[in-house]
Amino acid sequence: MLFRSYTPQFYNENKQFIPNSIATMESVMIHNRKQTLLMRGQNVEQPILLCCHGGPGMAQIGFIRHFQKELEKHFIVINWDQRGAGKSFSMKDFGANFTIEQFVSDAKEVIQYVLKKFNKQKLFL
Image 1 (cartoon, rainbow, N blue to C red):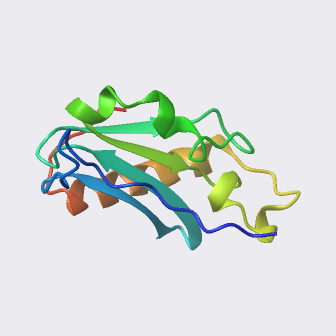
Image 2 (tube, helix red, strand yellow):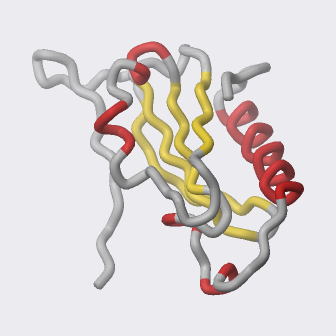
């Protein structure tokens, strides 16, 4: 059974949409593998915080936004389902032997992608 994934938008105390906020989930191609990013923040002018989970098979996109609400006030929080985990899992990954070098290379490409997307020079990892 498949479920559509989404992330709710930000609203102020008057239930009005916060115009400069971001709440999106997107899949990007990183080294020819679809990898999913959850991007949430109440102001896109804030710095970027890229969260890397514990490695293959340990995804957090499905639940993490419930624990990072305070961070989303001060950062654009980006949760990344890394290669082989969660929404980034592919049957091509089944039984694969991932290397640290692959994860580092993927991370560098994800960093470049989000820096360009938000027109920033740096981020917090």
